[in-house]
Amino acid sequence: MSEQPKVRTTEGVVQGRRRQGHAVFRGIPYARPPVGTLRFAAPAPPHRWEGTRQAVEFGPVVPLSLPVDVPPRGTDWLTLDVGTPDPGAAGLPVLVWIPVGGYLSALSSDPMYDPAALAEAGVVVVTINCRVGAEGFAFLDDAPPNRGFLDQIAALEWVQRNIAAFGGDPGRVTVGGQSAGAGSVAALLTMKSARGLFRRAIAHSVPGLHSTPALARQVTAAFADRLGAAAPTAEALRDIDPWRLAAELTSFNAGLHAHRESWGRLTETGTALCPVVDGEVLPETPWPALTGARASGTELLVGHTRDEFRSFSVMGGRYGTFTEEDAHAVLELHAPQPDGTRAYRAAFPQAGPEELVETVYSDALFRMPSQKLAEANAAAGGTSYLFELCWVAPALGGILGACHSLDVPLAFGTLDSPVGTQLIGEEAAPEAVALSRELQEAWVRFVTTGDAGWSAHRPGEHLTRVLDTESKTLPYPEQASRQIWEGHFPAPFDLS
Image 1: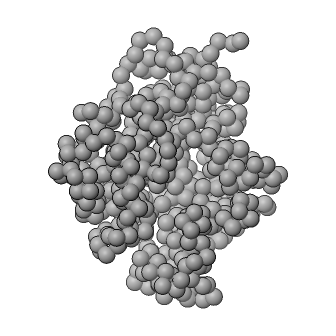
Image 2: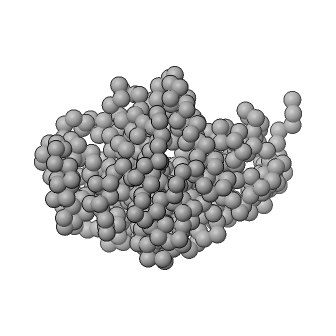
């Protein structure tokens, strides 16, 4: 049996293991555990160690604010995993994946992100854990805001220091993510502290989830009051068990509708504690920053699925039940005002309440933020490659459509992962395998060369790769929605 691979990082030697033709190193700390006096603080540099650190197990899961049963296992949450074709190689392209969902979960150990297929194609894959929920985004009076983003920057700094030792090229780093991970990528595009840490970006289903400081302060105060804390401060929350804090946030998120009158659009998201446009860590939202040339464009692969909202309505038990009253409320809350409500009804005159609700939610939450990021990045001098996934997930007789997250197992080639089989089936059809190969090849080409393989998005053309059984490059399919949102950026949530 060949010797297991060892790599010397700036903090010490790590030993991984060989797996399916590549090497994996897991649970490597990129910052100190954010507990005790470091809780709610900016990430601190990791400790050095003597000897060889075993890097064969995933690090402890960060506290998750989701109704899932994940047992706590240690507090060394700020770790990352590396999958590399060959630690002895040099100059390989690097993908740093941010596996954040809803700003509530970060799970690098999810089999959906298995790096095997990408490593086989010659890419070094780094998957990071970072703080989410209250640990990462509660707006506390005596702590830095957006600590989850600060963690991501610390991980990218680790990559710059160390990735060459794993065969990667620190000058060819692509940062990527889906959903809140894509929102993180979009934020990193605008943050001065992230400049120079990556060259390219991949963003699938970019959300427009940001709060103003005024709203974030009020929401955090209400959450602290629920906990019986003396004040919305790190000092007052520091002694509360992190997993209890995460569980309380899960319950708090479930009751957001009770605050609709004062907290408005935020109450429809299920995410009370999201990134704050604080003027310091996150100076402004990405769209105006890029469009106004206050941030530089880059090589960007960005896109969304056609039926972004469908899985949320199915899982929430609302699919097929939306009424005209629901449609009116969604239009008033999420269509761009003052003319969005009228514009949607004019653009979709035959649409019933169900279609209107799904269209507006899909647009406001993911499709328009993604499409507008492509436009803004191009306006800032970058090159944007836009896609829309239209292939229908076979699960539940196709009722999910081309739903949120369907693109992730396709891109990673993890069709046999739990999420992959849940959406695609135990036996992936040949068309699913072919589509997975197409999207994966686009990723590999992009992280290697900066070219996704189809025409870039340009003003007046809006060319888009429509991914389906027979993929084509066409004008942007959601043109009616794009026109409704013309001149409107996804605005931060604010007090009503």
